[in-house]
Image: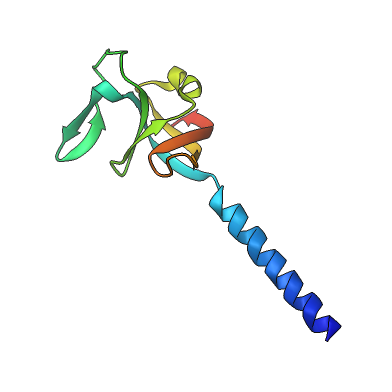
Length: 108
């Protein structure tokens, strides 16, 4: 009986750890860092206008899939403005799926 309880506890612990790890996992993404005022529709998909010089909007990430997501730690992304990049990002807890926290960024 003790062996069964220990096995059950170990299984429960591992499942909780796996769930917690997946919840905060970084996701690899590629796209363009852009000013929110410079996002324009092209063929019904949001795209960054690389000729736009407006600096009044928020920093956003325009994914290759066409999804636009605001960048919470925009100071990290500013040097890569209007460039195609690869990022490792974590959706924030505050507004999951609408805000990103960039962990790593590199030019593509």
